[in-house]
Length: 310
Ligand code: XMP
Image 1 (cartoon, protein in one colour):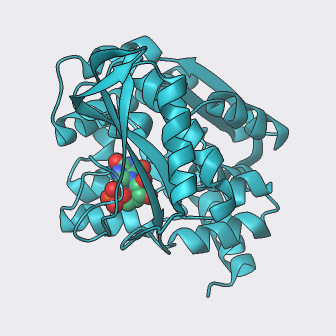
Image 2 (cartoon, helix red, strand yellow):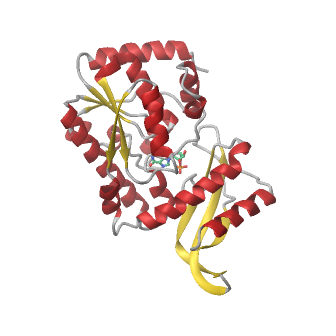
Image 3 (spheres, protein in one colour):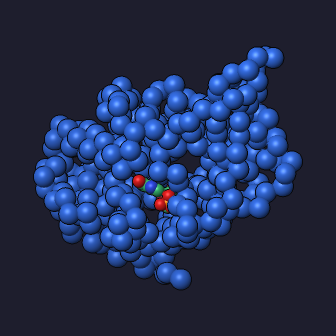
């Protein structure tokens, strides 16, 4: 168990001394990690910090509005960059999971790099946590927010990186968020990956596919909210399956529903869900999304699976 007050005081002191008189920019995607990291830095350096929300077109329903509203209500200077088209362009023709992650990461840093140069900042804040560092070092995945760990010199992008949460696991981040007085919607927020819905569209990412998985995700989240699970979401497959819509046989989309229980994302258990909940989710998804003909439930733990499909 961490001493949250002590952690916060130390972090603020360290951030202040690292930053000095320089300007700072924060990569704020909206998760508990990035908002907590941003707020810590705001507490340390006030108006020297600008939080930037990059609208990559890959966020969940209502998420861009939520993030910007929350940051502003905390008194943080906030800027939104509309980069939707550029992100979708970068995914064109890419089907491999790691290739997609790399494409996301490169676009993300390029976009931030150019905002950082415009703003004349020297430091970038990121909500990297310990699980990200461990899994990247082990080679399980190349997390976009652990540049140094994967051997890319952050200076190549022209700025230094502040990662005040890198020694904490998710439960520790939540304790710090509560101690900082952040709203419950933030401190108890379900984890969501940096590359967002792009990891949940198998194969090539397009605006149309993202729209399908966004709607399906909203349904899964709504229907599983009261279960208090670690993560729940929908995944859109690249393959198709035969089904029946409006009395006609069609070759349509497949959605997998994934609901997991976990402490720190390093291991996870597939949640045993009541059949009627699963049935309701499948019914809502197939009724509200005309192209979806089949819904599946993933019963695999991590390991051998990972939580995300990509
Ligand atoms: P996996 O799928 O590796 O996920 O079991 C473990 C936790 O990390 C999240 N995740 C990511 N987060 N960038 C992120 O910021 C990523 O590339 C990424 N991949 C997975 C995942 O949602 C889960 O909470």
